[in-house]
Image (cartoon, rainbow, N blue to C red):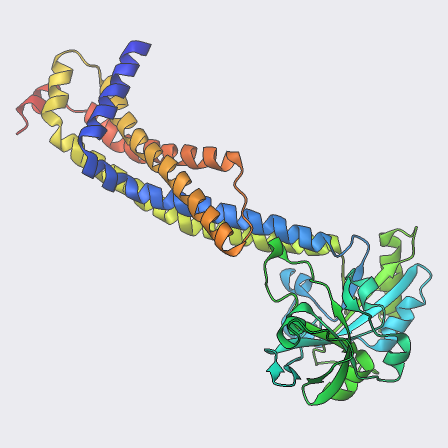
Length: 425
């Protein structure tokens, strides 16, 4: 097809769309909704994915977590009843791991790795919402790479002697002590009174969002066991206990070597034979990233599939409108064919009309979807990602819908017999 003829067909298609504004607008509405949904979902999921990945990286590449079981086992299809039969972790497990030659220090956290203990904190007439209470060791800040905003963390002596001291997260600190120095104040944690000795800085969160990452307070694990009745002196089966161990390798020690030492210590303590699988989970930053990749990929696929339904509906609408247009313009088609227009020229005319409609819908959908995401980001701070290629994919995808759903009416129009078309009333 000559360039001049092709441009003439494009102009004719554009003119047809322009003269039928209402029909064209209704036709592309479904495409606009579909592309808006796809662009919006993609931007939000990618933004959250990048932000959460950065938060996971804050954990530290060498930290090794030990848990009774985790989301990794569930993601691998392990039976939940079987996981529940695993033995719980104990304080002696942490001591044994810390004695391994490749391990520098081990932190223990009660209230993580399972059902969390939640209660309110009170100071005078002020009180918090239900927040998580963690019982931990004196090296909690170093192991989990946190910073103190004020005051100090508790010592090994305070852990050993069950001192009722508490370190607040940012949420209870701001709720109980607005514009007041909390150090030395006495607060009620549940039914017990604790002395505030420090406040932790804000913990990392996806995109800087407030997702409850600071809704917690930390007390010595010895005081935690006494107050909440959770014993970690011996292992238990058939009961999920909220115990998480975090091990830091010695400087200069490879993480894989440290993981092998941790695994060997735990297998010996649990009396596992060589042919028996681990009855505990080892987790690292890489494992957490792989798990999140699986989850985010599944979420992305599900949301984009749902959004594509609207795009398919829009494509069906394009096919219906173009089919009606062929019927209405039968005499026009007959006249063009009688004057020498070839079948492929008629086919190109109607196919380009469909592509033009869906491409316009794609451009509008990209603009609308991007605008909605920007507004959400400005209003809530939710992380978004709008790479240039997502715009190209949106427009290209919409144009492809025009080709796929516009092909049938275009073929139908080009196949009309000129004589029968001229007789059509």
